Image (cartoon, rainbow, N blue to C red):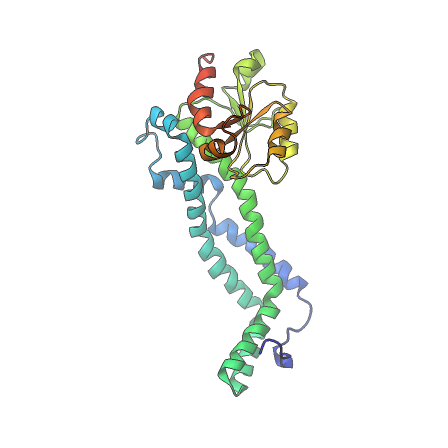
Length: 284
C-alpha cells in the first residue's frame, strides 16, 4: 500500500513555511506556559527524593555525593518528561490539527468514500503525516534543542544544590569570571587563588568543551575542575583537558573503570570527601 500513489484529494496543498513558522511560535508560547523553569524542575526532583537540609546531614551528602547526584540527575529528567508529555502530545498536536483542519476534513471525506476501510485509513494517515511533516519536524527539533539547552542548566543546578546541602560556600558567574562555581568566593580568589576551587559544570563534552576549558585555563588557577555526566570519555579528550591543567570530574564508576590510576581525573566522591575538605580549612 505504501508504494501506491496517493489520491489527489489527500495531497497537501500550497506552501507550508508560514504554517511551520506559526507553529514554532506557538511551541515557544506553550513551553513557557506549561513547562516550568529549570530551577523549579530541579527543586521538585530534590523534594521528591527527599534530598533536603531537614532530611540529609552534611555528612550524608558528602559521603553519598556520587549516588545522590546520579539519582537527582535521573529524577530531574523524569520530572521534566511529566510536564513535556501533555505539553507536546496534547497542546502541540492540537495546534497541528487546528492549522491543518482542511487537510483533516479532506482525509475524512476520502475515507468515507473509500471502499476498503483499512486501505482508506492507511492512505488518510499517510496523507496527513505528509501534510503535517513541517510541523512535526519543527516539534521534534524543538524538543531536542530544548533538552540540550535545559540539560546544561539542570546539571549546574543539581551540583549547586548538593554543594549547598554540604554547606560549601560558592559564588555563581559574574561579569568578570564565567565559571559556574567559584569556591568559596571571588573575594578570596583575589586574595589567594591557590586556596580556591574553580568548578565548571558541563553535562556533556560533545559541544563547546574546548571553548569551556580554554576559558578556564585563562584564569591561571591551579585548582580548576570540569564536572561532567559523560559515561564515556576518550583518552584524547581527557589529555586535551589535562594539558590546560584542568582536572576532569566524573562518576565514581567511570573513574574506577577507565581512569583508576589517572590522577588528572577525579571522582565525585573524591571531590566531595577529599578535595573540597582539603581546601576548606583555608576558608573563613
